[in-house]
Image (cartoon, rainbow, N blue to C red; front, side, top):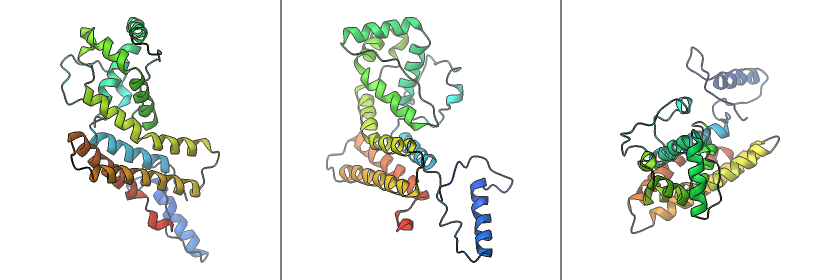
Length: 250
């Protein structure tokens, strides 16, 4: 069975989903039907996927632990922003500034014309929807040269300019999560996402993660970014396997 969201919890501390599965086990047992509430409880695939990706982002130093989109429109960017902010946070804050000012949008269009890049309107992500972060990064990579030009020539945006290593991390993020985007889009597009589809999709993601981990692990001359990515990919895999196991589906 495929469970739904688990945010709301009762006085027992258990999610409604868990309580339902335990009651279902009792009811089915009364009808001589064997059902294991723990082993046959399949968590929400989209929710677990998001948890795994968020853990990966944090260890890749891409996503700040404290990011909360509820206050995204109200918070002002501090002038003394320090190095602890991630490249995704900097990109997000840059887009917020540009979107809030028609003047900045005109300047970005001008920079796009100067660098021969098609203008695309900056989009801000939502913390609980990793796909939106993926789309924001995609836009950022497309506007890389215009954004660099804009930040270099404006004191207000200069401190948000991404370094070469930060752009490289965003490129790694985009490449790595492309298969996640493909699988989640396919599952979301089907009218009825069956358990078989979820199993196949999940195994595809695990295979992709394992391939990335294997390639990084065997690399002899690992740099700081490689080590960061290796740790992040392992964390994302472990988070997903905590809720889903291939062995339970055989």
